[in-house]
Length: 322
Image (cartoon, one colour):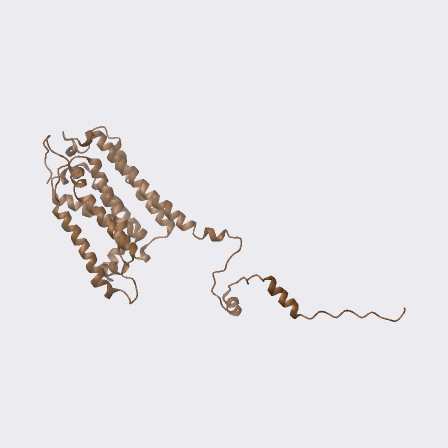
């Protein structure tokens, strides 16, 4: 697939990847088939088959998949610059999987997984410990020098590594944003879980950043894109993995923190507490233990009440002398 390069090779020469185009077309075609044919029979009448947001997530997923797997990202990353290869893996393992999970309707995943052994196996594989360990194990393996050097000349190994990386990442995101609510963790657990995922990849990232010699021999070639030497290329790859992955995970953690712990903050700071209880009778409110604050009286209502109440008679004075 990717052999030794001549010094006169052009890194930016267009290379068609028919297999990538076919994969993208199959995914898009399958999406429209599922939505138009299977969806109407799988959901209840009046229930949305897919939301507009899910359609946007699906479109972003397809664009990322195409950009990471086609020319020029694929050719530069697999042949010339390991930093481009690292960016490609970041797109496939960090950015694409959560979008794909958010784009998947719950009814579709339940049809794919089933209810029997398939669901039991899926439930086990998406446990936070299992999914987290599996994802980080795959990330570590894909950065072993022997594996990286061999995958460049072996198409089956190359695409198998990418398939395994994306699959492990999809499982890793299920306890956080998966369609099955019963498999999701609480917000504190999600934040701790994502923090751990951001820490483990820093090990190979630090190793690449501070390595003295050439780690991946296949990238030690005469043709240098943008004049970047092989050592600087390795250091850039380590920085992309450490900074990019960490910042991505921490951004999601911060978002979850504010979404969870600041919900209803503005309403709680109001001067008057507004009851959210539906209007019911006083008896039912008392029985249910709900205290509903009555609305304040207006001046007109108070004046009307005073007009209806007769004035008290004045006390009669005694005419007898003491």
